[in-house]
Every structure is written in structure tokens, then in C-alpha cells.
Image (cartoon, rainbow, N blue to C red; front, side, top):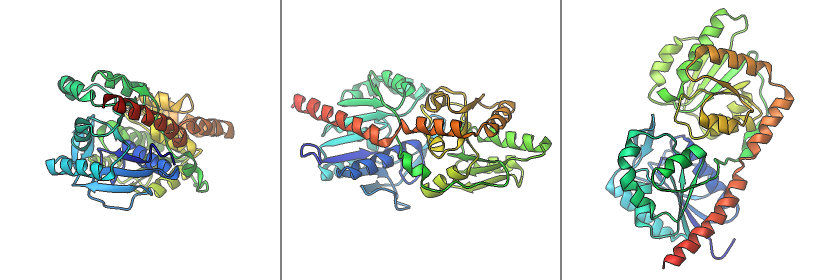
Length: 369
């Protein structure tokens, strides 16, 4: 442990008790920092509904509310009381560095950025320029001056940060690669397709449901689709499936269950229509030695690195063709190449770079005093 950098506060503006990409980043980063013997505190909207898989000290603040954002619903803590509690929690932790994910998300992250009491590193995750960004950009440009070091998880997220006047170093979404191969592979008696994620319109789950129903209507060997996750479209997607025995909805699952399903899938599906700055689920499936079919959108093209079969978003015929091709090309060479690609996004490598940037933030903050 380094004497000049011992205590780190990680801030997730989205509730860690609701599955999501940013939340996965924060938890994975907290595990890796703790493994290196840093004293890690994680702030998140509450309430605490489960025990999180991290040795870090987790502070759950207030009660998260689902707020529409970027075609999704973000679980945010919005009360002034939660904001004040977040600031007090940071002060109690007395950190050497505060690392805020999505620094302009209301209100926990925004309050911590605004006060800027400690060296501050910010990571931008969101991609896509919406009306809210255009309206808030002038105000947020002033807020951005409080950030000591800025990073982004992808070029698309860095491009959005530029609208705030922020030049962010492009890093990547990291994850615990080895966790996705610790369970044995499971084989089923027919091709099994797995989707993991939120059930909302932009995620495109309706497309893969239609693809499975259409394929199985005419094919001799039917596909099985397993859907893991919950969200506002859950009811309509179940109705769309029409009670088909070929489609199973398992609801929200814990991390271990998710990883076991990645290891038992023949093909992993990532059918989002838009709004993905990256595709961590793609890399998780590849690390599990599972073939991937993903929408042909910028964030997914970058994440897959040529190791996934791409399909046109929302195009059922394209998805049937892509899934058929993926099932026919699950050879050892393809799966091993995809796993090696996924390993380039290891959380160990990412945290090493973040620690370097934490020291940059320390020096910049010291120079202002």
C-alpha cells in the first residue's frame, strides 16, 4: 500500500442494488482496489436490498427513483437529504482521491463534483447527444472546471464529454475476466440463446423474441431463448412471446446466476437499437467462451473487435441469419480468439492506469492550493 494514496472513494450515481453497466464497473473496480489493499468506500443510492459482492465499505444513501435517461430508466437518489448525506459520507471517509462515475448525473455525483473538496477523477460513460445535454451543456461546462482528471469509457462517451468542454482520456470498461470462466460449461439438448440486461425499448429484446418465434415456426430444430433481467417492458415482452415454451423469462438474477448462464449459452445476444457507448455484456460472454451476436451499432462494434456476428438493429430477418451463422461457427479457434480479445479489457489493467491518474489528480489539486 502506498503511503501517499491510501483511501479512495468511488461514487456510483446509480443504485448498485439495481443491475447496470456503470454499477458493474464500480463494483469490479472496488474489488480490484481492495485486492491491492487500498481502503475503499463506495457511495450508492439505496436502499440496501442485498449484500454486494465486494469487500469495500458500501454506503447506501436514501432511496433510488427510476428516472428516464438516454432511452433507459436510471435508479437515482434525488432528494436534498441524500445529497447532503453523500457529502458527509465523503468527509467521514477522508479520501485521498474521489472517483465519480457519470459526474453530472443527479444528485449524488453532481453534488460531490460541485463541492470539489478532494482530488477528483471523473469517468464519463454515457453516449448520445440528447435534448437534455443540449439544454444543460452551458451550465455543466462551468461544473466541469471542478474535475481534476477526466476519462471516458469509449470514443463515443468522450465525444459527448466534449460538449461539456471536457477533454477526456479514452480508457475502457474493465471487468474481472477470470470470474467468467470459473464455472464448468453446460450443454443443452437444443441451441440455447441468452439475453442479459434491462427489459426496455432501446434494448431490442422484442427483435430477438420475434426472431426466435419466426425461426421456430418453420425450422425443424427449434431455438430456446432465455431472458435474464427486468424492466418496464417485461409485461409487453411476455405478451409478445405469447406463452411460447421456447422462450423463458427468469427476471432479475444475481451475478453468479448470470455468469452460470453465460457459461451455458450457445449464443449470447446483445440486440440494443442505440444508446450503447460500449458493450460490456459482449466481453463478459466472450470471456465465458460463448459466441456472440450483437447489433451493428458503434459501441458494440468497438467492444466486439470483429469477434462477434453483427446484425442490423431491429431487423428480424437479419437476426435470424446472424444467429444461424453464430451457431454454425462455434469452433474452438473462434471462441479462443474472442476470449483473448476480452482479456484485453481486464480490470487489473484498467485499475493500474487509474492509479496513475489518481496521482495526477493529487498533483493538480496540490498545485491549486
